[in-house]
Image (cartoon, rainbow over the protein chains, first blue to last red):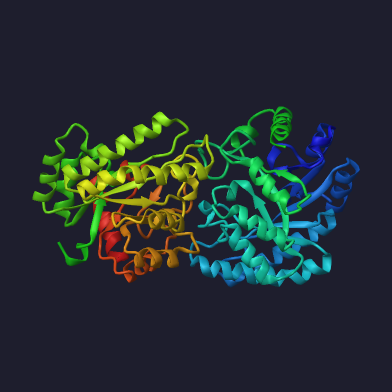
Amino acid sequence: MEDFLSKLCVHTFTTKPWPLETAVEKFAAAGVKGITVWRNALEGRDIFASGELIRSAGLQIVSLCRGGFFPSVSPQKRQAAIDDNRRAIDEAAALGAPLVVLVCGADPGQPLEVSRSQIRSGIEKVLPHAEANNIRLAIEPLHPMYAGDRSAVNTLAQANNMAEAIGSPLVGVAVDVYHLWWDPALESEIERCGKNNHLFAFHVCDWNIPTTDLLLDRGLMGEGCIPLKKIRSWVEKTGFTGFNEVEIFSTKFWAQDQDAFLQKIIHAYKNFT
Amino acid sequence: MEDFLSKLCVHTFTTKPWPLETAVEKFAAAGVKGITVWRNALEGRDIFASGELIRSAGLQIVSLCRGGFFPSVSPQKRQAAIDDNRRAIDEAAALGAPLVVLVCGADPGQPLEVSRSQIRSGIEKVLPHAEANNIRLAIEPLHPMYAGDRSAVNTLAQANNMAEAIGSPLVGVAVDVYHLWWDPALESEIERCGKNNHLFAFHVCDWNIPTTDLLLDRGLMGEGCIPLKKIRSWVEKTGFTGFNEVEIFSTKFWAQDQDAFLQKIIHAYKNFT
């Protein structure tokens, strides 16, 4: 329960083998202070009761992951995405999460510019519902290796442009080091989103060398080549006082004992702060 | 031997199972007009004689792949890279290739900025040798997923900045759609390198959805989501009249009959032009 853990948040997806209740119990016992809940962890559960369970364990609910996936060549699918994002906002409100993280989406069957336009339009369509529930929305730029099918927003500059164009205090960005560490404009773009007061979330992990899978081979902080302390210093320079959210998708770690993995996360976090 | 093949170049690495002599014979028979030779294809061979063989088959030698890999935390390794790049220039001269393509390199043990500075310094150190041999050097920005260990130059803007800073008519850039297609600044940066007359090479393939391997799952033109015709139109708008170089690394295609694969390449190229 040392103070150095006061800004440590762990995503439920990071310890995917654990059901929500186990994650909550284990995170709290280990001294983790924040939790970001993935929607799959809420399946089959009373969402309001889940929020109460998390709070009663002493954990702060940092965000709900994830909305987004707005673009599609199919108008029906675009409407379904709007509807699903409104449900995500409802779930965040029921859970007591102040923020929904948006993985914006892409459809390989259409140009990136069209997908980007549909993303902006989708966010604008769900914004009134977010406002009615006082839920913030974070545009999370994804690594360019996901431009084909997961997100047509691939740099922080694009996310900043979009958030500024939408111009709502409820729409900001999520900075994930995994997606953005390579970008030569990262420092200036972090500064920029800080100035606009729309840096809503900060996600950490590491980039393994070599990386063996495009999705499920993220590293623990310190294992790879991402300059974590430097990026974190840029984030903090903006006045950001939120959590450092550990978001690791890893077949390797999921196959290990999750209690031991959680201790590794805490150890790695200690070295990183 | 139709005219539509007049700008088709194939990299020896694309048909990796074929030794150089087979590739030359098969490319020429299929009506391919250009060849980019990878250095591994020259191993154990008289390089001058290999150049003669290629020319006598009616193929134009477009470039030699690849130099680069300048950055390292070790000064000895940096010097070894300089020496190796000078050898690559010698090999290009012996072969009769006017251009060496540079995969710039990165060392995960040091910041990207340091690697970038070492890349520029490395190019400047080999430039006199390139000038003495009248060999051009193309900085090839690599996809951000290779920033950790293969190239700290990951956007065309960075490559353009570096080429302009070096300021030699012998130093330009190679545009590979695989690495750059996602970049919202691609059109303007292609225009920019055209204006500076340093667009030296244009490489094509496609981005598979899903992509199952970070290195060896490139798609054939038309199989994936890259807007090839659009990017090609931007390239041609600059006045570029060089080859369209097919550079596909694919475990899947290498396991197939290479004659059939070459026919697929020609068919795909026909649809793409």
